Each structure stands twice: as structure tokens, then as C-alpha cells.
Length: 367
Image (cartoon, rainbow, N blue to C red; front, side, top):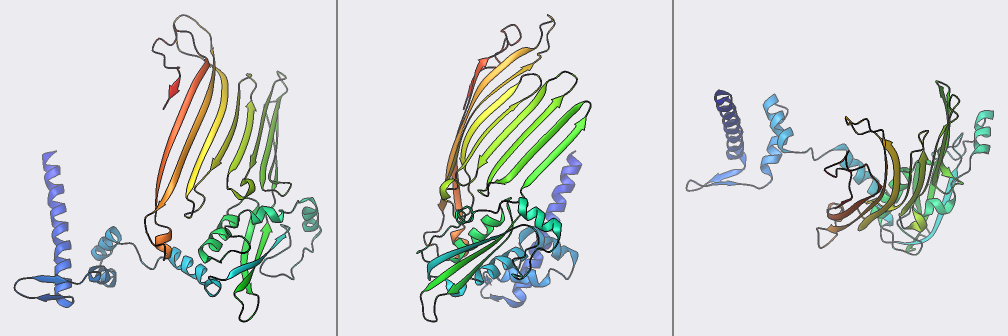
């Protein structure tokens, strides 16, 4: 064991020596001036030197990967290119916002002349409920009459694209006049097919699920599941309804219920607001629910399964602090510190008898 540790220390010392040697030799050659036994190194020159020499040998490449992140990453380039799309419109007043939603089959955002031609495309579109304009508008971080902020527009585009009911989204702008300080905003979205039916059958059990991820075109998620057991006549039932982004607040509401063949059930109601964007300043959530089930606790007295029923409460909140006093650049605007807190409570309405739980393992919790 001691020999292994000693060998590991030797290896670390050797790597440190090589790294230091490379550092010194590279800097002395070009970026340093020796005066009275003093080495002066230019700030940022080491990273530049490492980037220039990283492909010369495997060791240089390993050191570069360990200590530096590629400054010309694809993600950073995409972000800059996306922001440049709106650079000429920055600071202008948003006069009007126009929203166009397209059915999921046969249409294209890139080609406005493309129309559905096949029968199956037309049939699918006739069964589909298009997303309402106000649903899309709720995800825009800017309103009519505000000064255009390219970062907020880019985030709005990302938020719309991330929804399950949307396949494509493009935001375009058009100036009102040659010398006008106003701009019109055009949002084009292509819907995704939102109704998902599922049927399964096994061992005399037939299950049917129907889910709509864009119920009535409102962006709500509504799912129902039913499974019938033909042997004992019992069934499983589950329903869940989620309202996304209530009145442009980005607060989500959820209500759900689930029961199984053993008469066990769970029911809950919740409100939540996530950190949906780096620009979000506060978030939080509240969950209230009840669960009831049966479970067996190992014992030598032959006591059968016990009933468990408990209420759950879960609350949390957080806020984001921008670490830069002046939010002038993209990096500074997205440089945040998030602080959060949580309260969780479990209250047992029915719990196992004391003989099976002498240490109160199944007891009320609060933290």
C-alpha cells in the first residue's frame, strides 16, 4: 500500500515537473523579459501557447483538455450567430406581434408554398386542433410596445421550441419603415401531433391510455389510463391534468389521481414555477397529496399486511441573483447565483401497529 502511494506521488511530481518545464520554456522563449533574475509573463499568453501547441503531441493535448475549455466551441458559435440575427433590430419598439401556427402534416415553415397533398396528411390535420395564438404568445418574453431585446427574443424562441406540442419555430422581424424606430414581430410555428393512444393486452388484462399533449390547442397535457383485469373484475385507473404557463406567469398547475387493483391510491395537487430561463429571477413550488397502500412488515407473529395512509406537503422557493452589477454583455446577463430553500412534511393518518414498528420508523417527518 505504501509503495503504491509512493509511486503515485512520484508520478504526480513527474507530471508537475513536465508541466512546469513546458510552461517556463514556452514563456521565456517569446513572452517574457528577464531582468535581475525576474520572470515577467504576459497574462493570457500561456493559454494561447497551449492552444497553439496542443496538437504537437499527446501530452500537450492531454494537458490542454485538463485545464482549458475550447474557446471556439460549437455551442458558443451557435449562440452568437443566433443573436446576430436580431442585431439590426436591437432597441427598436415592438409595434405588432403576428403569430401563425401550421398543422403538423404537409406544411413547412421554410417553404410557405408547401401544402398537404396526400389523403393521410389531410385526414390527420382534420383531426388535429391547432395551437391557439394566445398559447404561443404566452411563451414570448416580450410584449407589444416594449423595446426589443435580442436575448429575450432568442429565449422566447427556445421556450416555444421546447414545448411538446411544437416541432418547429421561427421568429422573424420586419422594420415598419426605412427610418422608423419600430419593428413588427412574426412568429411561425409548426405543430406536432399531440394525441397519443396506447393499447396493451397481456394475461387477461387490457389496458387503454389516451394522452393529449395539446388539449384543445391550449398547451395543456391531459392523460387517462384504464386497465381491466378480466379474471377478478378489478381495474387500474390513472388520470392526470397539467396546465402549463398559466396566464403568462410560467406557473404550472397539476392535478392527478391513481388507483390500482388492491384499492391503493394516490392523489395530488401542485403548483410550480421552474427556472425556465437564465433570465428567470424567482421560482418555487407547492405540492399537496395523499397516498394509501398496504405493505407487509417482516415478523414472526404471523401478522398480515398493514394499512398505510399519509399526507404529503412539499414547498420550495428560490431566487436568482445576477453576479454582475452592470448587465452589459451576454455572459454577464447569464452569470447568476441561485439560492433556494425547501420544506417537506409527511403526516401519517394510518400507520402499522406498535409491535411491528417499535422504533417508529413509519412516523411523521418534517424538515
